Image (cartoon, rainbow, N blue to C red; front, side, top):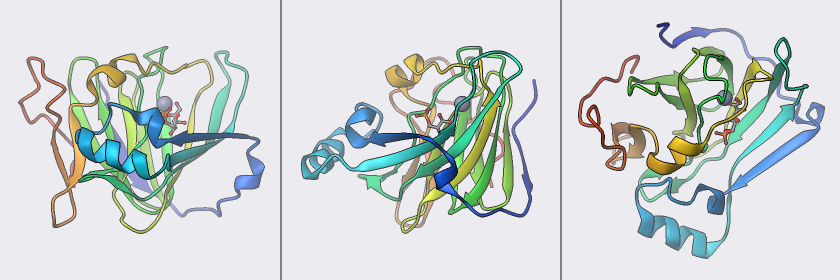
Length: 202
Ligand code: F6R
Ligand code: ZN
């Protein structure tokens, strides 16, 4: 199986006006995803803040077409856990995706259905390849700026949020006083839950 890989290239300017379809995901839509449920509840009480947004160039959902867009994960934390996307497998699981770092920094948390895990840096100019079969979630590890990426994927791929909603990813990204740290997700469990099989860390 292919492994995720990263290549640096020069970023273009971000022009959000180009993208007609604007998806906004708020804190309430990420219920059950952050490990500190108390911190989640008290942050939500203060307001249903926008966690991330997607500007999409949607295409017909048929093989041969490519959908693309801009993903913006805002800066913030729920307790010690950084703001992130819900994350998903593609419904057509053998479809890949490319991410290109435009602004800010963060990581892509990925895993296969078999429990293999990978966490890769996203920075301006970085091209991140998410191979077929790898679920993916973007995490903004910056305390003071958006994580902005461009993504491209086969338009017929579809999105499967089910298993991620139930148990999350094997690894979560937290701030423990000296920058970001990748730790095991207690909710994940399973035979490989305790092993450290993460590759590609920097
Ligand atoms: C498409 C894709 C991205 C994400 C976007 C939001 O396949 O991976 O466009 O959809 O970053 O994340 P989710 O869909 O996990 O809420
Ligand atoms: Zn995807």
